[in-house]
Image (cartoon, rainbow, N blue to C red; front, side, top):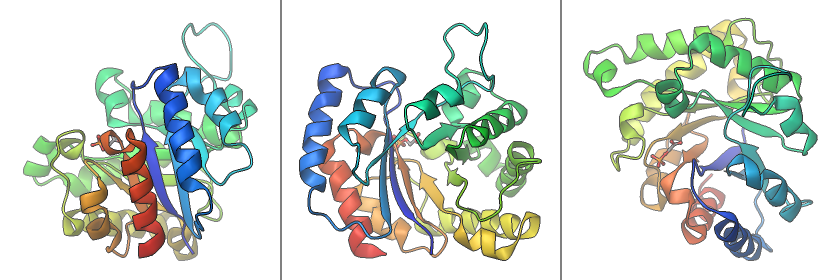
Amino acid sequence: MRDIIIAGNWKMNKDLDAVRAFCKAIAGGLKGKVLGRVLPIIAPTYPFLALMQREFAGSPFRVAAQDTSSHPDGAFTGEVSATMLASLGLQYCIVGHSERRAYHHESNETIREKVLAVMDSGMKPILCIGETLEQRDGGITDQVILEQLDGCMRGVRVYTGKELILAYEPVWAIGTGRNATGEQAQEVHRQIRKWLADQYNKELADNLSILYGGSVKPQNLTELLAMPDIDGGLIGGASLDPESFLKMVDIAINYK
Ligand code: PGA
């Protein structure tokens, strides 16, 4: 049975007051909910990780980091290592987001090092992959996805499929309001699961949650979750508002 994950990626949004207000609203909204297989996660910026982790201690709600260094420690000003994040009690860390690839020139090899660092620390990476509009229009989506999987996962040991989460995020759908249709996303998710079955094994592939990201909101989540290989969403804009986030958690609870 795969987890259904509603993961909010806040990117560089919200100051201390806004984080506190969100926590308050969410704690109230989650009270008494039977989540079943649904796992709500939020990834705030670094300064608020510890606060949110404390706030939700003992609840099924999880806090994730948005990125980490590939280095274990040392002279890397401004960076934060996976072991430091894990020492806060965090269990998840986003790796390879397309904004990191585009603005910080992260290669598949760098991302692979981060995946390994996160797994070594005991956390689970939420590994993002996805094609640009030019690549989709050029008919090379499959090739790009497979290259990213090969590059970011080379030599990564996965045994059960629960050690890692994948997120398919077509770059053209991120923050544009233009989401992939359920069918478009499903086609890529199906290929990702086939790749996992070929590289590892079918049982592992069936256990691993694959999220879709790119303009997910309460209005399109049902259509996406209806697809057999879509196991939740990695959500930017629509995760910033507590009401919208809780609505998506409810949709997931009621749907799968
Ligand atoms: P969006 O962002 O939901 O605002 O499109 C998704 C993401 O970048 O993870």
